[in-house]
Amino acid sequence: AEDQLRQAQKMEAVGHLTGGVAHDFNNLLMVILGNLDRAERSLKELDLDRAGRGIEQARSGAKRAALLTQRLLTFSRRQQREPQPIDPNAVIAGMADLIRQSSASTLVVDFHLADCPWCVLADQNQFEIALLNLVINARDAMAATGGPVTIETARATRGEEGVPDLIPVPGQEFMRITVRDTGAGMSPEVAERACEPFFTTKAAGKGTGLGLYQVVDFATNSGGHVMIDSEPGVGTAVTILLPRLVIADATGEGLQPPAAERFA
Ligand code: ADP
Image (cartoon, rainbow, N blue to C red):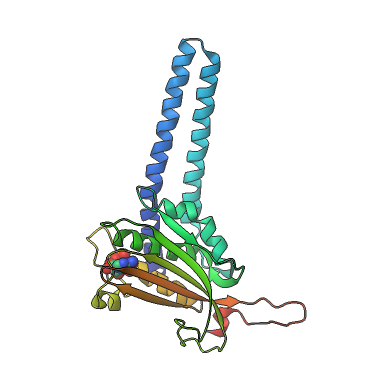
């Protein structure tokens, strides 16, 4: 049943994505068809240079379309959960295009990524899905108002303001990943239930209520934590805190057990 739930979460994320990708793919098809028409006309007029350029443009459009579908397929095929050291900033940067395409019209996303090479121990696929889920929620919350989604990363230390004392390791360092919107916000009643599986306020077919549940599931599995800060009419910030993974050097200095073991 857990596998089925995970599959449903994944299909939801992929479904949201295909909307945006289909739009871009269609634009590229228009480019290809337009250039093939131009090449055909040029051939009839025996303007071989112009025909050649048309074919070249069509080819380049087709290559971009192939890259687009390839990316989507790679994303939807990666299945198994494998916690491994990942650099959240690198993963987010690598997903920038995919995130922007998570909407039929290109979504405006502001990235504020910390200049910080910290790693965390987490499943990359689940992390990517969690990010998409947060971005999609932010987009939906701003459907009426518009406005950019902000994705921010920063270092955080337990005990610091805003970092909960829930994880009992003094001085534990975290990567903080926040997705922020200036949308509708949540009433206290909605905020309280938002992470329950299948809780949704969206119209049938628009929401499954699995998005935030997946985000919490991912964070918990990675030894981390999720914080939601939301105000009706002002906006929402969802923060994932993931414990920093310190990899031992040759002397064993700085040795730290993998996050998942430590917090199991
Ligand atoms: P879904 O998006 O499918 O409804 P989620 O678990 O992601 O499922 O979200 C549950 C509910 O929490 C949403 O239906 C919505 O009411 C609320 N919610 C989540 N994220 C936001 C947000 N960024 N702004 C306002 N409300 C939100």
